[in-house]
Length: 143
Image (cartoon, rainbow, N blue to C red; front, side, top):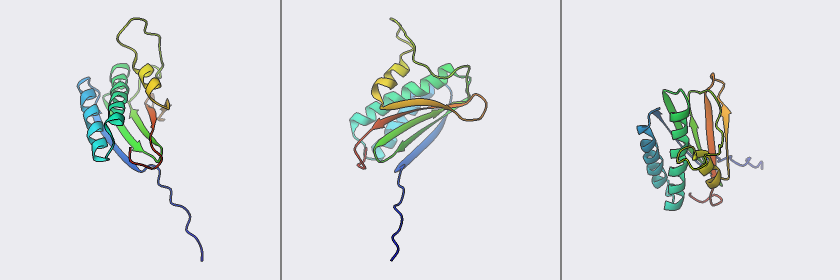
């Protein structure tokens, strides 16, 4: 009797939404992410962390690119939760910078501190890019 190959189940769950690249969309993106994580049964700690990361990535896309729209995607795998924000492009890729005493400009420092990995990839559509971040969570358990 032949055995079936193991089924690839990563990502376990996926949710994406598109919003206009406006500062008012940052709060909406945060709410949409939190609402979805509640539906997925995620605890308040990871919801708070994801909300903060979504806020920072969407804010960067709105403030530092020439985008008209941004797309945010949440993907829960077996051991990570990935947040990705696609913009329509800008003059330079994301970078961590020394902000000194300024309140602004710390978004990627926060993302770097909270996440197990993050990065950016060009989409092949002009200067558009996807900035992503990953959070670790329980092996195969709901976030």
